[in-house]
Length: 401
Image (cartoon, rainbow, N blue to C red; front, side, top):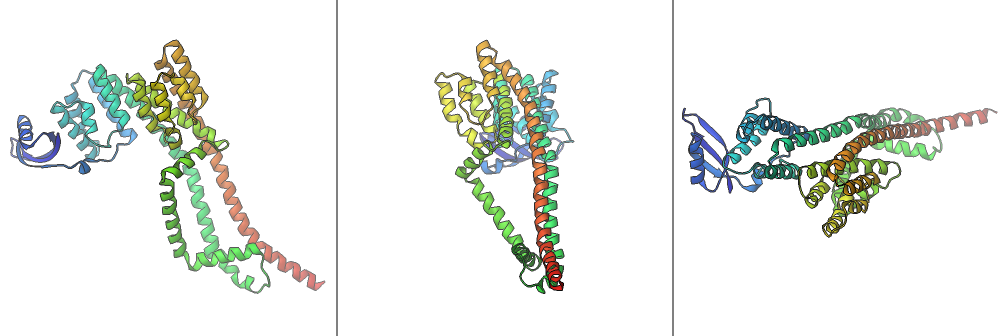
């Protein structure tokens, strides 16, 4: 089924534009006719043009919550989508997405397929949970679970982002202090240092850097941009990213905290998928893509194969390097008691709390590190300036004696 961008005319003679899915233009004409529209022109949209930007977690949460409340109140799916797409408080592009979904659902397409038609707009996790809910008939409950899931994801991401504000400010201050000292303060000492004989090594290095900053600052900016792009390209290489992600979870102190965060993310996703009635193999295949660490994700193919062959889920998770043992123990208890779904929800809630604590500890470690770096930079500059001046005073004192 293709997607067409059309221009039509309503009963009042007004021109209406939009998008709709149909097998061909004749079918599109019939569909619009049932809606009281007369087709004027239509053009098929290629797959490349259908790709839209993925919705943010807070928008996914709002959509899921609205859908859950409307369906729970007995509103039909078509009418619920119509109410959501008519919400003027939403951005125009987002309303267009929901309008497209509404048109596809009106043609008889399942909601999950309509969501999938929007390209990368909706995550795989979202689409699969909706598809599972369609087969079980609990779409309103699943939508409520999705709203809670993405609300937690959004809050955690916002907390991490806000907690990193202070370290970012310190980083900017370090750069600003160095630029001011190198570009404006040190050149004032150039004549003084020129009258001295041999300068200390630190002072020579500092004055050399100062000269470049003062007179060749544009070269530094260009070099910084090139270095940034080079690092970005190198880090994007799969083999390099794999090594970096391995190092991240094996660093002293920081590695343990990162493991907690990744475990919490996996546990939360797995519990949501499993509670929706999705088979455990599919749950694992989807959940691994939400972890955010390529090294941990690379171990899942082998683990999934072992679970498919009959190995207990707890044993498979235990073999993953990057998860805390608390997850394995909880899954093992759930398997033994036959209450894996409730244990997954319990461990997900517990790991969410542990993840928040781990995030706070990470920030608490970063802040003093940034202060130490700033102190070292400023201290080196001060020593490099004071050392030759102090040396000259010593020489004068020795000569007068």
